[in-house]
Length: 165
Image (cartoon, rainbow, N blue to C red; front, side, top):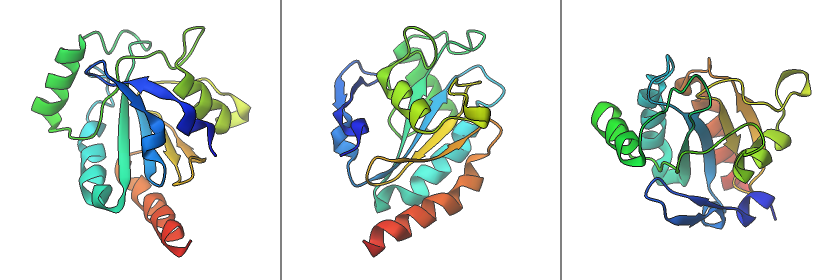
C-alpha cells in the first residue's frame, strides 16, 4: 500500500481529510497561489477536473505562501478568490509549506517519490504538479510552466491502465 494513503491533511475548511479516501483514484496534486503569474492555470485545472472527475479523477490544490508571499490570504479569502475568479470546484487544502523544515508530509512524500531535474526534490515555484496513479504511486512531476491541458493525455493513459486491471 502506498504511503500516500497513510497521510491525513487539513482541508481549507480546517477539517481532517484522510488521503486513504483517494485510493483507486487518479490524482493531480498542485501547489497553488492566488497572486502568481501562473494563477491563470486555475482555469485549465478546473477544465481537467470537470472533464475527468466522473472517472474517479481528483485534483487537490495546496495553497502555499513560500514563493514571494504570493498566497497571503486567509483560508476564506483563498477559497472565495478561487470560486469567484475561476469557479474552482476541486478540493483545496489548508495553506502548507512545500519546502523547508516545516514542509508538509504530503509534499515530502510527493517530492521524494518523484525528484525533479538532476534529482533535486525542492519545489521551484507555485503550480508544480504531481500526477499519482490509482495505487498511490507518483507517476509524473510537471513544472510550473506545464499547462494543465497538456497533462490530459497522461491522465487518459492512467485511466485506461486502471480500466485494464
